[in-house]
Length: 288
Length: 207
Image 1 (cartoon, chains in turn orange, blue):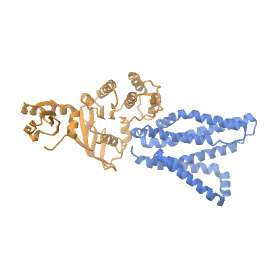
Image 2 (image 1 turned 180 degrees about the vertical axis):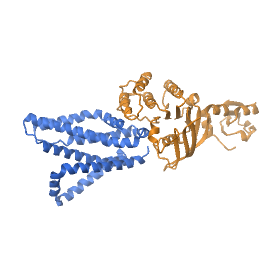
Image 3 (image 1 turned 135 degrees about the horizontal axis):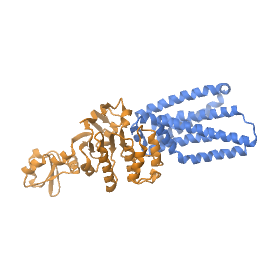
Image 4 (image 1 turned 120 degrees about the vertical axis):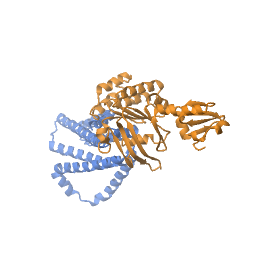
């Protein structure tokens, strides 16, 4: 499988002492990659570094096997972007966006743009100021799709949207990914969205990649072992990744779930959700 | 790049009404007396274009614009070109109004004087852009407003102190004779300098 993005030794630091990296990532094409992590972990900085919105201090980025520094403009013709904050000028309408984008992307497809507008019930004459947050997000996403990109880079594209709109957008992503040449990398706090559609998860914490694996592998292999506070000592410390002691019980994050389920027959070993994994990995106690 | 120019011009669509209103007032004043306020519409159009920086800032457009092909370079160039396009259009409209009124009143029209006058206004307005845009690209529109105010105020005070001691007759005579040739060269030269300075600042910016 070809890599759509190759990042080597990427480092980005800010004056406030936050440091991203060193990040080394190979992102295969044809997949939906979910980027997770708590606020301030470095997800947006990573995406902005890839797009040259912020300047990296060290490292190299290859996209579509091309050096990003040397061929930035050619590469950007094939990338669709949605940023975390709304970014289209409020005084414009979708009609205006079409006029603007035709003058920016060589391959901007107005027919496809207006088809998407119709599919998503967006009026081409309504000014963005009068649109709801969901409508604005839909407009941003369909604009990102309308120049036939090969790669979508999306920062929190589904945040603040109701479940119906989110579902529509996730379907759109799945349709987009049907073409094996296409890839999506998106960050989100709504981890349930990723459980539905992501092929691979990259978990960032404090500027570093904490976990990088296939989504299904993570959901199958990791688990939560639940026991009472008294029973906690019966658990082999080598089996514990991290744990959280509640008032009456204890939740322990484990790996190799099926094996440990057999080992600890008297305990409940549940499947883990990405949200639980995130919380326990970040907030859980790691040393026993 | 055309897309960014269109974006700026579409953004000021709403302001065009006030610009047309000012041109109409100008039309009225010209028709009823000998007022020459022909510099106002082009200067107003510069101010209106300056508001597109505020729109971009308010709507977080810069970060998005950078993600587009050749975004940083094109956004800077588009700001210069869209401003110059608007200044030229408003100057032409203003002078067209002036010619129409002169025809209507039966006054003789001195086309050379009009051409000179138009050129001076375009030059003066362009110098405003040449001066302001690098500051805006360096500091952002909010901080730049204060910086521009301080600098303009400083120049005005300095000018009023020094002006009585300066003999500008030679300069005025020189401009009268060679202005039409020299000034465009100056304007183009300083515009390029200003553009490259703005670009240098913007290429380093992070959002």
